[in-house]
Image (cartoon, rainbow over all chains, first blue to last red; front, side, top):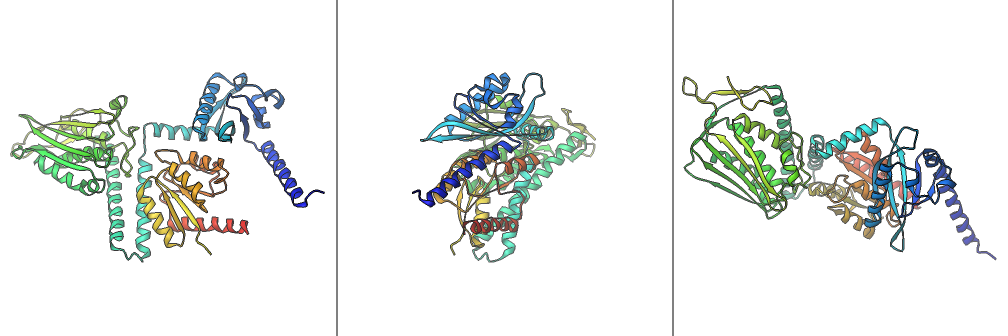
Length: 391
Length: 129
């Protein structure tokens, strides 16, 4: 006689399988199983409708018999990756059968394992509207250019909000921890302010609405000032900061704020892409009519194909930042605009794994002096202008 | 009653520190992972009651991590909360379609996160009884 518990378990299992079958057949999503050779093992009704074939006609066929070439190529590439890595893959795929409009699906494909080997791949796809496709394209475009001002702001604001909440809750008896939290808040507020400043500057440059006054400034003093701003972060991440400036450097006549921004952005970039126990060196040299500044690091470096774009607005390289602080892709764009407005030039030499050498030359006295012997003030006329107009 | 276990996965150590401190203060047992691969290992080894994970991590997209956890019978039932700076509707949609129990966008409220974790734990405790 059958054990009633076992019979109950069997019935339960059968009912579970029945339920699964019902879900697969009634869901509006496409559901399928492919073997690693891309042969269709299972297809639910929405997929049959999409491919305009009955289930019986689809089972046992390779996907290449029913899909257009691009979709087949992408499917085969994804399957290969799933089999090799044994990890699921998410992708957006456009299915097109002859005589119909292409339909776009967000597809998640997962490996089905047997004895540790991938014997099949289960896929679930949901049709996505043009609105979602556009939004995703926008995100992809942002990601490919690493346009992430919103991402950086949200990350920073999340930290500020979280740490303020923690401090307000009280009960933080540990003074060292309390100070660390206050420090994170301060740093993130500085970071948010910097993002806002960069965005406003970009807008001002583009609108030709930026006026600054020239100052007689010491390059060495500005470098020391900027290095001080990064001393804590460098110490925390065990990065050595080195300054190499000759004591007898002559002053330059440029807006102090602009020079500080240029140095800050270059130093920040170097520190963000330098590994623990790395080194950042800022060096300045006098020449007759200009000063030359280098910011060198031994960090992750920039791939050759990215170098032409790194001074573009909102561009962030694919190299992974070594700092938890999120970049925005604005710092180097602002740097180039300021340097060029001063009649100078900025460039970079880099090799992946060896680090970067950012070089800047700035004329010692780009805008001269007025009749009273004071430095001229200047105004940018447009973002595309290579030079500033003296006003 | 033993404390509910929460696994937090984020590549930003400051978020890990924040969530560890606040969740422990709320009575949870917290374990941390600084990347998705480590998170996957800890999920299998520690069987937490809830996983709170970032989405944009250098080693693996949080959505891929989620699918990996769902594909493994040992971790498939663990509820997931995505905590991310990706605020587009398409991302929320993706997170939810990946079976996330909750999807919070940074800057999120700690109170809300704690409440959602408690709700999930309560529902799972009731299911288990």
